[in-house]
Length: 397
Image (cartoon, rainbow, N blue to C red; front, side):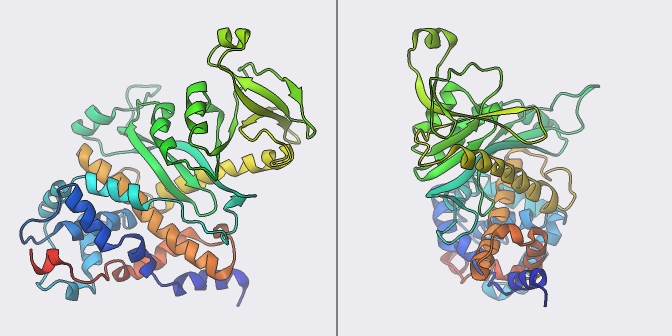
């Protein structure tokens, strides 16, 4: 058996109860109570089940609503003390509206966190956990409500085919887990959304970001989290080279404005790294909060910055492979679009949790495992996702 085939096989051998561990029913019930969305009477589609259903929508994006419910319930009817029947699309929509987006967003906030361990390959640079900041957009269903709330992107002729939402988040490079994500209308700038995302940064992380995110205010906010930063600068920004260091980098400062720079007021010390990639004329300028070259040599940081593209891979997993060619999020109501988006992110977190467990078991990087293969395995074994014990909501509703 070849090594690559073995790695595909080992994915299927990892207990898919990892998904249940990622979304424990006790946590879901607590969130439903805190958000005042728990079922208060017997319903065919109780709130706890609907949370799992929203996650399942993120796993089966290309399937219809009733088909997703059928797959969710297949092999799991013994869980409930009454017979659950496949509801009409209208009943499913009503149940989703009763649930709203708040419990799904809160579940993501509590569960969607970095999961790498010290043994996780590719997750660390020296003692720092590698994370990357970036954003993307998603097309949503073409409805008046979605267009009013989320807007449409500009187009060279007329208007774009679909309204869009903008999403900014952090990815844990070693596991591809997307955490701290914020969403809003496509007209809202990435930098504005990033302010909320930075709250998820922690001491012990090193955050990579592209030049579009750099600004004095955002840098200050990110620095104050205690995380180390490695961001690219735009070539047009003036950055004084104050003292050359042993590894060829420079000590410098960033300022709120040119006026502050001229007076040397409110400057924040940074370290500047300049380099070119062989065969390219473009110069890269990186700045970092790590001022001591002994702790992080310039050449190592230049190589590390190339890991920023990991978040593009994570977004592609969600937008292309996980959605299986579906071009828009399914819901026509803004509240359910929010529910769709964070359900999609929770489903991606569940898939990546399974892959992380498999990578630890095989002592390899998750990059060596197939995302599509893992998704297919989860599709085949979905009853593991709902194999939780009956709760008071089902027995006493």
